[in-house]
Length: 202
Ligand SMILES: N[C@@H](CCC(=O)N[C@@H](CS)C(=O)NCC(=O)O)C(=O)O
Image (cartoon, rainbow, N blue to C red; front, side):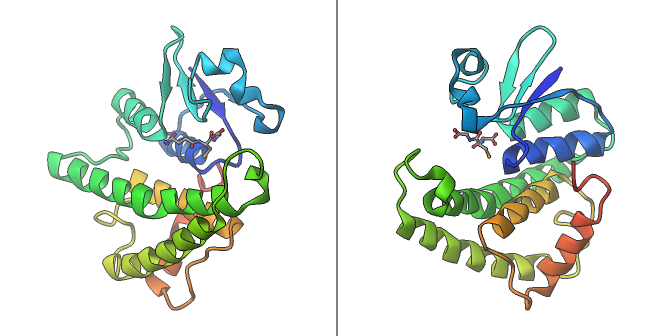
């Protein structure tokens, strides 16, 4: 197996942390977007959207989408379980992973792509939309602070892929100037806990 990686990417980081939490070692190849490597025919043959990450299996099959890659790795390496064990836990982890992705990570990616210099001339930026996403993300962090009160991790006090998604979203948040305000003490304590894990810098 090989991972096509983008070191600064929140989605690639989700997979890297997942791999590290599983104790796996999967060789990776960094794709340099600034050189257009992700738009070359050989990369587009692996992911026609030109995005990272991609997990390439030994027979050449390519899996894209970080959530799908994590599911595949969990199926072939079930320990430690990062997607839940029982049907109920698996539903809860999926529910929270989707919430963290759709309500926090995706809006932060929109802030990044619509306001950051790096995307100027690459896509049509609508800075006002980026600002709407910034405000919406802060509202969601306020909501999350109430939801996780009294919990060590997002689902049932057990570290799961939902924590990984939020962790990677908040790292991107820092880079685009969206930080959980100091009064959100539950989110703050949660972040310290997640960031203190040995895999956090994978
Ligand atoms: N839904 C995809 C998103 C992948 C994605 O957007 N990757 C970004 C980096 S975070 C990328 O490769 N962007 C390059 C581009 O759009 O040209 C996933 O979860 O893997």
